[in-house]
Length: 289
Image (cartoon, rainbow, N blue to C red; front, side, top):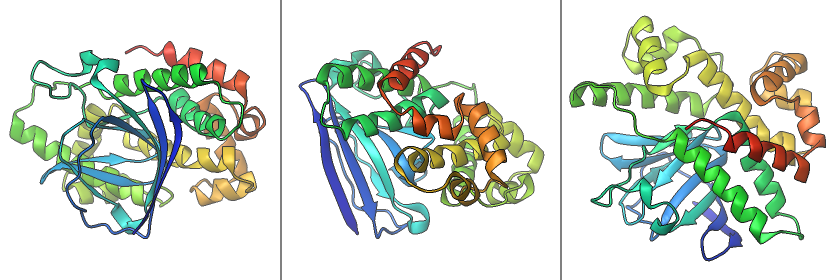
């Protein structure tokens, strides 16, 4: 396994780094701990964070994943794909309200990012690659992303018994993992329901209740999130990006992208600049949490 870590930003309050794993296995690795809280924002690929034998959180470019300081966990890479991610590290003093009185995290392990936060994440990565980095601006963008991510990961109490919640969580994670490994596949409800060991009707109900969106919209979000890196940082033709992501055509991809992110992929590629970042920060900080 080849692991690459690159420090992109370091202040007393916040550290931001780029992590990349290649040549990986889908087996769980050794137990790890972080000495600071970490927010993982995947840019490409997929990983799973295992908090316990039957509890895991999937990390894809449409998710934010929280790793609490001094908490044991293990990592696997479903499908052996590997991943590339921005990692923000911070101490408890940055957001003490996120920890309960016993020091346990008040956040779920992961959450679905809103579209503006996904774009802001990728634009932040682009900005950190430039020479004229403004430390104050980067700290503020980082805090905006933390706020959006924390809002997506707030724990929800569904009033379910612990055993029922565990069964539903396992079913949901099996579905998410399958989609994450191959988002461009021609998925259907029956196929995913079989993976979850639920009826199609029950899966649709459980998925919407626990993920906050329909299965169809979730697959679409995964596909679109996977394209952001190529749209912003790559030189590939947009038609190639569209077809690789599972869209039937350039026009289909463009229409879905615009509906989800509020602009076309071509417009985003042209406007990956300070003005776009400022606009996205306004949208992200206005998100209701």
